[in-house]
Length: 130
Image (tube, rainbow, N blue to C red; front, side, top):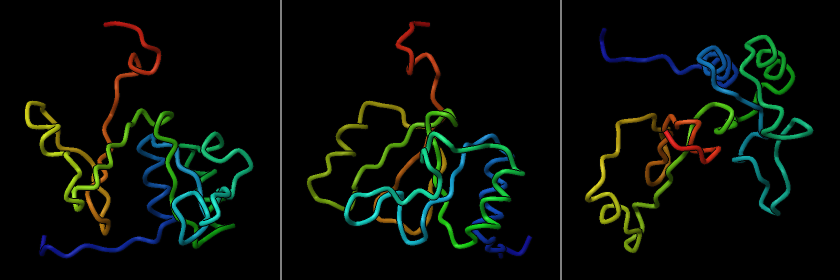
């Protein structure tokens, strides 16, 4: 491999994520799920609740909204997100994790800080004990 990579359109990436079992949804281009006024930027009526991991459904969505950003239903995908603002001097992230083990994980590109998505144990959601 020569170190180069291919940049895929968002719709193709969304299908790949769905094939990996992640529940994706289309959100309006240029947003992260909310407009500046706080209103929903989801294309789907119930937002993240309508997210799907069915590749055929995801293909249909991106055929309809080809410029849509990719949203994830983290809970349905078995993920949690940590989003420390490490670029802020008073963040405190490094002190917080000093005595903890933080696993290597997925990281999106092109953002300040480093949002991290982790697989989570479903028992955490229900509060049940191991």
